[in-house]
Image (cartoon, rainbow, N blue to C red; front, side, top):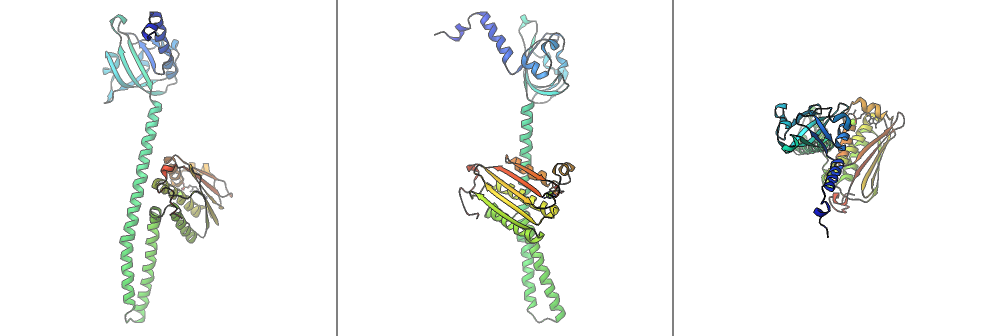
Length: 363
Ligand SMILES: Nc1ncnc2c1ncn2[C@@H]1O[C@H](COP(=O)(O)OP(=O)(O)OP(=O)(O)O)[C@@H](O)[C@H]1O
Ligand SMILES: [Mg+2]
């Protein structure tokens, strides 16, 4: 059997292989002479820069394509240009394209041996897609971190309110009850009764604030019980009739999914309460095995979605979308004046993202 060395035995075969590699690799390759003038380019370089071979070869100097370079340690000035080095295995270059854009490329350069009269080969790889992906990954990580920190802080404040202020108010209530049972003149008794009422109102308020900050039911019992208690609070406070329909499998999800869905639905309900002047709010929670689909519909005044969101008055809708995006999902808002508002939330889930298997403890 022939070895590959034998197959490529003749120099013309080797030459045609080299030419084919030069023409077909996805990295851009250019050769410059010892004065820096471009002598040869491959198709990938034409595609990367937008210039054709005839616009580059013999016409352009390498400096006309380079907008600066950097090593992994620092930005590099022209004094340390790769062109002055024998070899530079790895650096970044800002490449100028024909339409005036700037593309970040990973580059390496090598000077050919003496018989090539100092020609330099430059290999470039487009990094803009990677850079964009890296930027998005970093942005997502940061947003995730901020959201998690915010949830932790809300949990801490809710606990402090419940255990600190809540307990102190309860002690005052007990004390006032004891005082109220003693022998008191009528005006003092009236005063004690007023204080009792004010204290129990304050206790209720603290409880409501703690619940809104972070309902313990969300961690202990799961999303749906927490949603049901949120619905009751909205019904009571805003005189809106709220209904929840649950379809599909009943299970617990990861804390990240449960928290995100709770916050998204909470914001949608708050928006309805604040702006819609609605009388009814319907929520359909549908576990479709691979995704959760939540639809929140109100019969309120509606609004022009694009226009209103472009005005950028609030952060609520933006936050809803961001929370969903972090989990690979979406939030879609459909509304028009006098036509009510529908919020459609989709969050993908897999079996691994089910925290407690098929537990039905949340119903
Ligand atoms: N269900 C709804 N019915 C009518 N208008 C709505 C509804 N939901 C949102 N809007 C409109 O969209 C705007 C943007 O909502 P968004 O939640 O982003 O901000 P916000 O509620 O004004 O402020 P924030 O949520 O930051 O406190 C609202 O100001 C309101 O005009
Ligand atoms: Mg809002």
